Length: 67
Image (cartoon, rainbow, N blue to C red; front, side):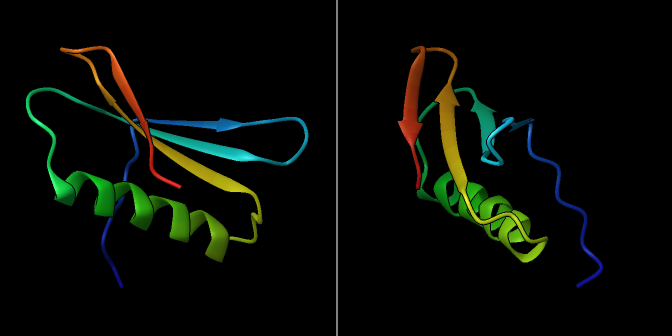
């Protein structure tokens, strides 16, 4: 669609899994979850089958599994 998307961190595991992590500050927002889901879907479109995403709220050291 011509847009640029830049997750904060992408880990490519030796077994073929991909982990997408987006770091956030402040309060939790539903839009952040949708953002990570978008990143995950882009990696699936690139042919990666096993993709998981996390939000990491740094202020609280809270990690949330998105999918």
